[in-house]
Image (cartoon, rainbow over the protein chains, first blue to last red):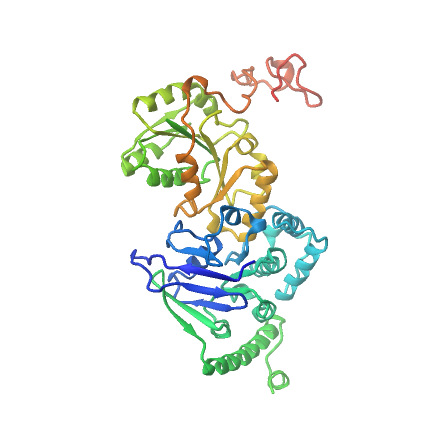
Length: 259
Length: 236
C-alpha cells in the first residue's frame, strides 16, 4: 500500500540540477502545481505517472514508500497505483463508451458488474450534455470526454494517487469534481492555472524553466481568501449556467441567487 | 553479432525509436543499420549523419518488401558482420500486414502508435503476435485510460509479450528496452529462420494478369462462396 511518494530532483531546461532536496507527498495530501505555460508542470506529473527512473526528459526519480518501484508496477496497468487525467479531450479508440469502459475495467482487473453504469452516471454529474453508453467515444465532445475520463479515473482507475492536469478546462463542473476527490484519503495533485483550485490545496509547487522553483505552504490568510474566491466562483458559475441555458441575466435573477 | 528487427506501420515511430536505441548504445557497441523500403527512404542517411554509424537501404521496387527482406537478409547479415558490427538493426518497410519480418533469433520489435486505432493490434496479425516486444509510441497524445485500453487489447492478442510505452521523440522509459537489447543472444547466421509462415506463392494475379473472376486465373484462386481450391497449400 502507498503511504508516501518521493520525487527526487532532475534537471531544468538548461540541464542544471533542480534546486530542492526531495519532495515527499503523503496519503491524504492535496498539492497544486502552478507556473506559466511551458514551465514544466505537465512534465512533473507525467514523471510521477511513469514512475520516472531518470529515464524521462527531466531525469527525475520517483520512489514509492522510499523505495524504487519494480518493473511490474511500472508496466502493468492493473498494478499501477496512479491515475492521471491528462488534458486530452479526444479519444481515438473506435469503441462505444460501454466497450471502452469494459476493456479498461479488464485492464485494471475490476470485475464489478455495475462499474460501467456507475462510471457513466458519475461522468454525467460533471457535464451538461449527458453521455449515453452507446455513444462512441470518438464523437464525445471535449467536455464529455474530460468528464468520462475523470469518472473513469475515480471509479475504474481507483488508485491511491490521482493526478489532474488542468481540470478547469473544457467547461466541466470543476467544483463537483473537487468535492468528490478531496477528502478521499488519496494523494491528489492538481496542475492548474485556476486560483480557486490552487488555494484549495495545502501545498503549492511553483515551476519555472522546467524545474521546481519553490514549494509553498498555504497560509491562514490564504484559507480565508480561498473561501471568498469559492463564493465568487460559485456566482460566476450560476451566471454561466444561466447563459448556457439561454436565460437573460436580470436584476431578479441575481437577487434570487445571491443574497 | 546481435540482431534487432523493427517492424510496424508507416508513421508509427520506428525510426524515432531506432534513433533512441542508436543514441543510447552507439558508444558501447558498433551498430550497422539497414532500412528496407519500397519507394523512398532517408533513415540511413539521417542515422549515418547523426551518429556516424554504418547504414544502408534497400529498395524492393516491384517486389513485395517483406519478400525482398527475406531474400536479402542472408547477404545483409554478412554485410553487417563484414563491417564488424556488434548490433545489426533492420527496419522493415511496414506495409503489408500478411507477414512479419522476425526471425528465430535476436529480437523482433513491433512499434504501435497510441493513435493507430483500437483494433490495430488485432488487424496487424503476425507483426504483433510474433513480436518479442511491443513498443507503444506517442503516449503524450492520448489519455492514460486510452493507453491502458490499447495495452489491454495488445495483451489479449499476444499474452505475455513485453510491452513498453514511450514518447519516442524524447526516449521516455526505454531503459528496459536497452537492457533487453544488450542482453540478447548473438545470432548464428546458418540457422536463421523466419518465425512466421510465408504467404502462398505466385499466382496469375501476382504475375499481373488483370482479368476479373477466378475462371481466368490459376495458382491461388478463390470463389465468392467457398474454400480455396483443395490441392493448394493454404498456410496456417
